[in-house]
Length: 357
Image (tube, rainbow, N blue to C red; front, side):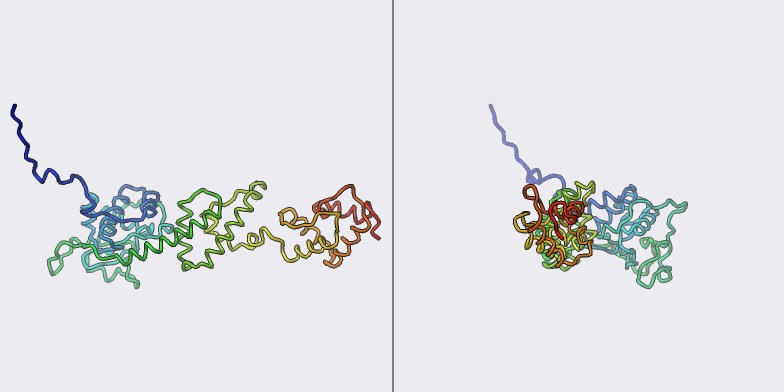
């Protein structure tokens, strides 16, 4: 029996298929999801992904790109690309279009909360392509091209022969490092808020809204402390809201509406100064007839507010509680809530349990 060895070429050992070493697109998952959720028309989404490939694929926020390049990459006719770019600009999915040296300065608008969904009304005519010598007349003072005039600069008769566009990766290591550090800080802050808030629903949307607000506040520790404190108060009062038949806010809406700045929320869990003065007057004079009030509750706060509608000053309430403790007799120990409720207050004041005159 003869055994033969097979000579394996080194070419056969090379990995097959796409490799990261050959280049890749680095894009935030949130932004990628926004494209899928907001851009629905096939023509639009193909143009958007072609734009992402031409910008984020080379670590750039925007680039000088011709319509012909996008048409070739996305397999969409040039006229349709021009119309799609116009629509995407109106939808604010891409930044305002500017004229470049070779084509158009195009870039994705990262603030996806500003995007409008695919609701562009159809038009009877395709986008009109104008010649390059019209650029100066169509530009606005801010350097942006009017939405009604998109230029296919790939067909211009320029004096010099333009070489194929070269988009080479640039060194963004420092910027990426700063971005990663900022994202890590925002992530840690969000974790504190999320644990304090308690309602574990809509985490992805809540994180995006929180991190944006946190960065707008300058990553301030004071802002974070206020939000976390408000989140704890919101978590404490949420069962009471549900018991009343109210629907509590998810974290995203709570942050967007700046509910942590609400005066009602700030007062939640503690007596106001006037309510506390009423409680102190009660505790100091009622004696052993009632257990002292040592905790806040929503019902107690509401009963005190109702009692304070009576025109008595706090000093008069102190004398009243002192007289009740000395002259009234009840069957067993009564509660603060019983004593302060308006109906029982009238009964006690009218002498049903002892002469207060």
